[in-house]
Length: 201
Image 1: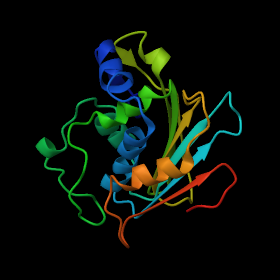
Image 2: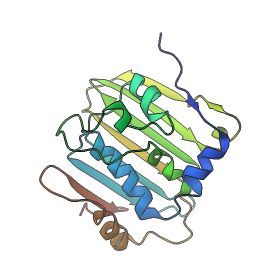
Image 3: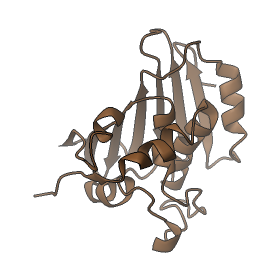
């Protein structure tokens, strides 16, 4: 039997490394894109949806290696984990030098939302779990709601950010251009984005 998924932390860390450190969309989305890059993704798809002004949603989907239950618990839910000290200097597919260093970028989305749903697939197993800032702030231990099932879907990870805190609509072209400036794009790493029901660009 698997141990429960568990995040341990000082409650102030969530705000200090998330809500306070990150507040604008481009660096937050770029941190999540970088996570896909470090997982060996060759493609990232970003959906900006503001059709419902009460629930603006941003979805970042990669085709990287995904995460196992153990990797979620020991890596993703380990705040401040330093990959370089673990000798994990290259991604698992293309052996590119990883971008993440300090293990705090995973909290960046709390700068624009209180809730994220994460779906990750690795070797025929799909795991879905939630990151709820309001529940996390209630203590020093957080056991995210999660489910696991077998699947024929390909490896990869999808992060859905719900009720994004923005009064205005997404400025799609500016977001797309700003995010692209964070990365060197080539045949082994491409970023596609779309706004609402538009086409990927």
